[in-house]
Length: 71
Image 1: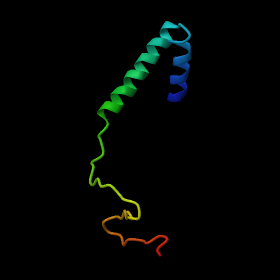
Image 2: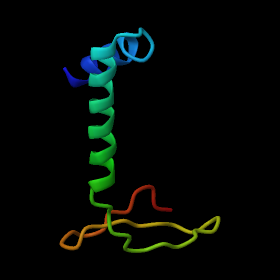
Image 3: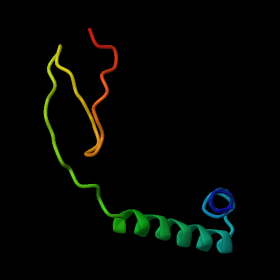
């Protein structure tokens, strides 16, 4: 429903010249920007460069690693 309103407000407001739709578009845009700015950022745990031929294993803490396509 929100995506429909956003599309309708964009077409009828700034692109169509309707003042009420432009005001709704501005409110929806401001809410979207505010939500993105206040969203918590994920914590970076590890950053490494992988060279050709190296492998990367991602596993949970309480789970045994699974080897896929081992040679």
